[in-house]
Each structure stands twice: as C-alpha cells, then as structure tokens.
Length: 283
Ligand code: GUN
Image 1 (cartoon, rainbow, N blue to C red):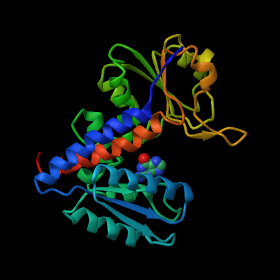
Image 2 (cartoon, helix red, strand yellow):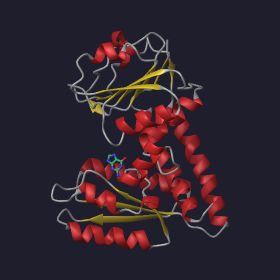
Image 3 (tube, rainbow, N blue to C red):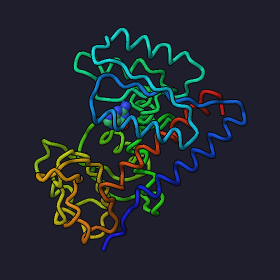
Image 4 (spheres, rainbow, N blue to C red):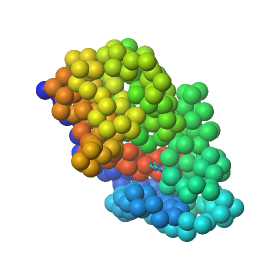
C-alpha cells in the first residue's frame, strides 16, 4: 500500500503561503499583477485560464485577462507582450499554450521579459536552471519538487527516471532532480526498453502523455511514482500516464490523477508571481 501524495491538499497550503506573501507585498505598496493572455477559442485552454484566474483571486493577485481573437497576428501579440513587459503593474505574464498554428510560440516565449516569465519557459530561465542560478522555474517540475520535499523524499543519491523529454516538464525535471543530487535517466519514445529503465528507479516521473503506459511490474518495490499525465482512456475517463491500479500496490508513494500534480502546477504559478514581484523590487 503506497502513501498517496495529495496534491490538492498541498496546493491549498502553497496558495495560503502565496496569499500571505501577496499581503506582505501589498503592505509595501506592491501590487503583483498577473497578465493572462489567451489567443483563440481552444476550449481546454479557456478552462485552464479560468482556473488560473480563480487562483489569482483566491491569492489576492490582481489578474489582467487578455482574450484575443484566433486571427491575432504575431505582430499584434508581440506588441501586447511589449506593453506588458513595460507595465509596472504587471509582475507576471502568462501566454496560454498552445497558440493558433500561424503564431510562433518560440518567438512569443522569448519576447516575455525573463523576470516576468512566470511559466519559466524563457530560454534565459531554462539556461539559469542549467547553470544552477536562481530564476523562475517551470511550474510542473517545481510543484513535483515541492511534493517530494513535503513527503520527506530526498532525491540525493537516488536513481530518478523521467519518462518524457519535453522542454516544459521532462528536461527541467531532470535538471531540478540533478541539482538535488539524484542520478538521472531520461527515457523517451526512442528508448529501447522503457520498462527495464523504470525498474532501476527509486523515483519515476511519468510525463509521456500516454494513458496508463507505466505498469506496476515496471516499478521497483517502494519506488516514488509521480504522474504528470492528464490523459483519457478508451472509455473517455480521465487518467494518468501511470496505471494506478497495478502501480499503487508496488509503489512506496504515488500521486493520483486527478488530485496530484495538476493542482500543484497551478499553485506554483501563484508562487512564481510572488517570486517575480520580489525579484523586480530587489526583495
Ligand atoms: N498549456 C498547457 N499547460 C500550460 C502551462 O503550464 N503554461 C502555459 N502558458 N500554457 C500551458
């Protein structure tokens, strides 16, 4: 029987701390605004954005909501980002991804001022992570580090396997675990035997986007299993990248889906807004 890592409960704690930190900033006359930019009418994105705006309200973060039509041009979007970069009332800028196909996501991310990049996607922030310098970290891996810490799971000296090599989860996750002295393996779609790689892991982070791919017999008994997946099974039911039913009896600790990594990702965005505001004011 694994310990269930309750992301929902921990996220509430992280938001409480953010609320407290925001109050402190306001006492100093700092209003840490978050600009949330949504281009087009992707329904999933609209749902995520609504949730982020609700989190802002709960944490006392003034939100600035920009809903742009699907045919917004690259120039128009970059002009908006330019204005937000200069606006002292805006501590953080989030452009919800994915963008409509005619827009260049890479150019958009790179246009955001690195100290307002609360997603932690900007090349400068990823470079800072590589070099071990302070900076804004991507929310999902930051939330996972917070979950490990909360449960007293110290990565130092442990073997960690990350399944998936995205720039927003897999690669930064590997770097953050490495910074905490874990030994890292990143497996991906061209890895010969993912099951055998996972069997070596004390910590598995599943971020491959394939419903229930990681089975219980792929795990070392007692392993910590972190599931980043937000997938649908054949019946259309929400599930993770880990087959929870077979994994839970083998794991030492495991995150559920929903109620695991997802809520933590959102909560870390609030922490990043606080951090961004503090950095901008030399605090
Ligand atoms: N789309 C899906 N997840 C994210 C995220 O964490 N940040 C942004 N900006 N867009 C996303």
